Amino acid sequence: MDEVEEPIRLAFSLHAPEDSLRSELMPVNERYPLADVLAECRRYFALRRRKVFVEYVMLAGVNDRVEQARRLAELLDRRVFKVNLIPYNPTGAFDGSSRRAIDAFKAVLDRAGIPATVRLTRGRDIEAACGQLAASRAAA
Image (cartoon, rainbow, N blue to C red; front, top):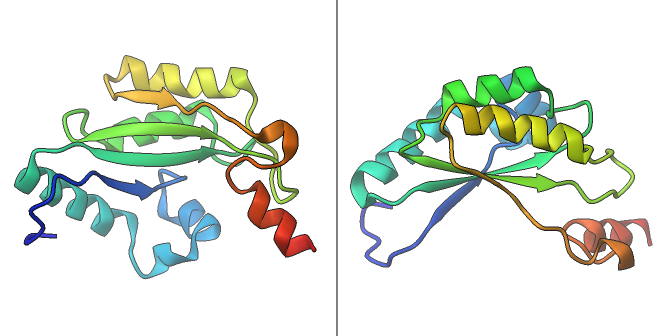
């Protein structure tokens, strides 16, 4: 990362503000715990002065509670990070968060001054949205 000269944007998949849940959702967390990843993101920002994008897929009843949004806001520095809240496209493994839950989660981040956007979903109606194509291939 230190030697890269291109103006790249760094993004990482977070999906949970605590290691235990993140490890359930993303086993790679065992090898790269949240504290280590966040430290590297801060180092990247210090070197490049470019915000780091946090990708956060919203899963109903799993990672979309207001308490989790508060914990996420505590973890992230508003100068360093920008959060992309991603509505989950149903694949059978989880249910996607309701619009109400996503809005409540985003409101916590907004109040904390953490830049956050809700990603638009496209292709859901024809099962071609993010994650849906891979799930349909796995089921075939």
